[in-house]
Structures are given as C-alpha cells and as structure tokens.
Image: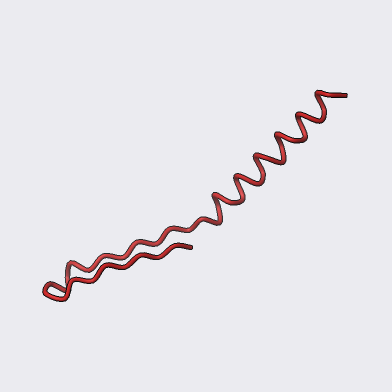
Length: 45
C-alpha cells in the first residue's frame, strides 16, 4: 500500500490523503504471467 498525505498548515480543511492498494494489481500480474506460461507450454507440446 502506498500512502501519500499532504497537509496545509494555513488551511487544514484542504488536507489531502491518497491511499493506493497495490495488492490486487500484484495478484493480477502474477495470475496473468502464470496463465501465459501455461498456454505457452501447452502450445509447444
């Protein structure tokens, strides 16, 4: 998870916080590469 926080000392109501969760992207990439490797192996035989 990536967390970014920007604070405005003069105007606290303009504070900004951004959270990005990279776990779903990691699962997608690992799954995609695994399926691609299986398909490539099946096509060789």
